[in-house]
Image 1 (spheres, rainbow over the protein chains, first blue to last red):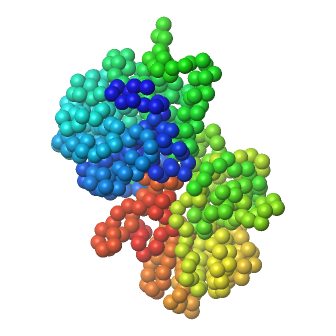
Image 2: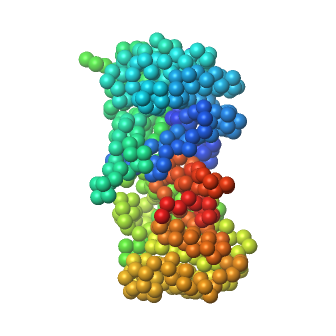
Length: 299
Length: 271
């Protein structure tokens, strides 16, 4: 199947930050069967990550404030990238900068390496030149980061949007105009978990991102809105736990789906979803999975 | 590492609020070392949402084969997962994956003290049995809990020939006060070079234990607890601050992958 310029063997991908370099799952999953693996987000410099606690549980969901810990792009290229490439499926590298120019620098560095199928731009991170607002928060910052990356890479370029914006279609249109080949919709939702007895936030960084089935209907609407208005290639990400969830996202316009938090509940879930998907399509007599995409009947 | 839908062989009340659940998991029982853990979850259950990490309490044979086939977990009913586990009946299946993490190091140990706080006793039965099998003849258990009823499984350690020293906060059994106080007092007569200390329990207790061991020049390994999502190093959620080798700064390591057992001297203790 075609996801913009990218050819996928199936629509089941694993999301950034939930699947390591793939090697963490090698005992549980035949990695070569996955549509693609999106790496954890790579930054220019090494990062410690946020102080613990980094996780808080909620009903049908998980809050995290991990803080993009990582060794920086040099060590990523030397150590993590060979692992990611050895998975036997498409490697999509997620990048995030603290300044607009860093997105360009990261795209340039990544594109110089062999065996990378695409770049995913993580714009849900603070812009230190923009008063700490997230790049994903406004049209100028989001399109600026996209343009910086686009200028420095010929690889297929996808931008991962934040779900918490006033008008996601406006942001989507602006990053597509800035040269993105497609979109990932969406990141986790900014959220708060509180221990009221201790009068304390449960996360070391106070707030975090909510993921899991709790957010699925909200993200489903966002995918539908953007797919209708832009016709862009979309990877959906938001609370996908089952093959039915994948099909729901495809019906509203996604071409592929990224499995994220579900990997934590069952390390084999990605392959189980893929198998279930094949069984459901056979049962329903659907020969071509592409025929599902964007088929929501609104009347 | 293996993932399986493991049949529950038994799930019995063992002491007040404490249960032992035994799972048929030959792939894990045959490989696991003391201090390692498994992730556990009831399939298709989303309340609680995340799986939980449990250290292996014991391994045992099951059926006719003369090799370990079952893993045992000791749990105390304190939260949503353990309240759910309490209701699980023999014959039901749980999703389990492991063995995970780094084990206690046992090579070259001649004499050892196990220092447990509360449910921190869980990994020590398996450890004590392993040390015994390796010929460690001098074994002490210092076990602290809030009250006598929570000093679970002392008899089994005594059967292994472990010298048991209980402590309770309410004074209902043994030393009245914290286990680390008692350990510090008794240590004066015990301290020798080849003495290895193992700790498992609440964070403040382990911090105190680490300080005592440091002051006496004893090597100490601690098993840490942290909230985890995946248990396999992917989510990066279970970060623990660890001192840099220069001791001037720190970095984060993952309790699931780099631990749960750490050299106590490496940890950046916060209390």
